[in-house]
Amino acid sequence: MKIELLSADDIARIVQIEQQANPYPWQESAFSSSFADSYFSYKLLDDNGQIQGFYFAQLILEQLELFNICIATDMQGKGYGKALLQHFLQEGRSRGATEAFLEVRSSNHSAIALYEKCGFSKTGIRKNYYVYADNKADAVLMSIVM
Image 1 (cartoon, rainbow, N blue to C red):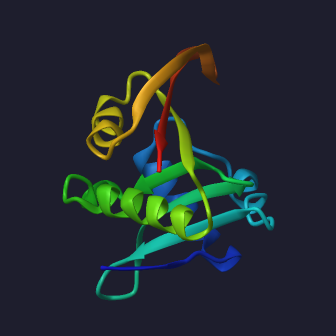
Image 2 (cartoon, rainbow, N blue to C red):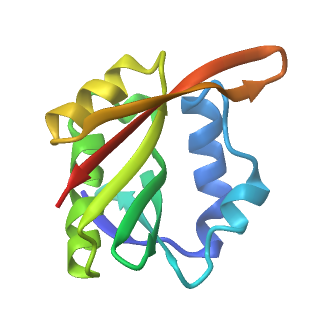
Image 3 (tube, rainbow, N blue to C red):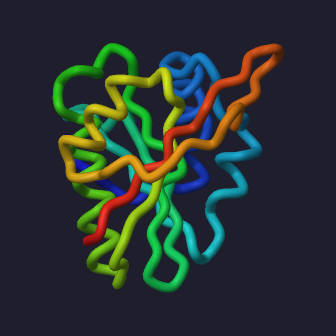
């Protein structure tokens, strides 16, 4: 596996991964709008050069925020999410970040466990933050000092 910068040319594949892996996927327009100057995004490539995961992040001054991280459904549970999360933290440090933030759906227990394993702590809850059709879910806020 290899991690490389994402480009706008990769959007079709990451939308496909997102739609298969996430019951509440980002829309293509959300991905397209995440290539501004303060954003950085990376993809996880398998040995055949196929995208199997990605993350989108933003750095404003010294604050780093993870917006989306996703691994293809058939590649989950193999440590690739952890590898991408560690890359996110390393990349943020190299760009001058001193703390990182994220929010995660409260029902996403495996993601919360991964974030905690990598040093993130729960810092709060946003009630009914995620809205999709008639469903609402809380967001767990998490952070780490780098």
